[in-house]
Image (cartoon, rainbow, N blue to C red):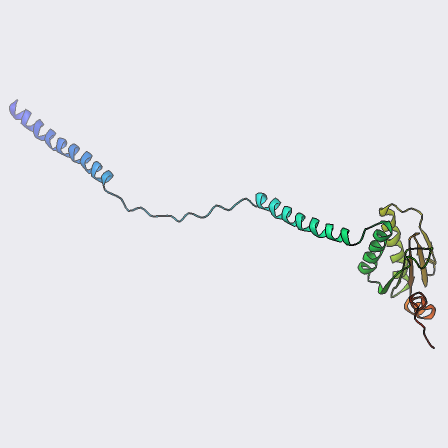
Length: 187
């Protein structure tokens, strides 16, 4: 039995050594600093949604400041709004030789006379149609358009603003620019 105990003791002794060595190794591993791979963290992108309103607000402030200065310079009444709308459409629709004449104090017929040319009769007629739509958007309903059938000379009468649209050769023949600007043309 004693030999049996020795055998078992000898068998158990190495086990005891092995088990005691393992926890010591674990403790040593925990206590020693282990070189870890450092992963560079990517910066978290800021939400664009939060940044956009701040930029838009800054733009709105700048626009309001510019708009308030423009209002202080010249009051915008309905005739001026009509004039600006007409000039915008003429520019967008590629009208040529656009002339705007202020008639305030010179005539009781209208405040502004605008003269422009189109390259062809179809373009002149189309521009007159776009002007009608723009005046309807501004709330002006009493608009008269004359000469749209032939489209050589189209007259758009919106009350405060009168627009003459010509084909180039017809414009040269009638020469309304010289008549309203006071230029004396010698032929």
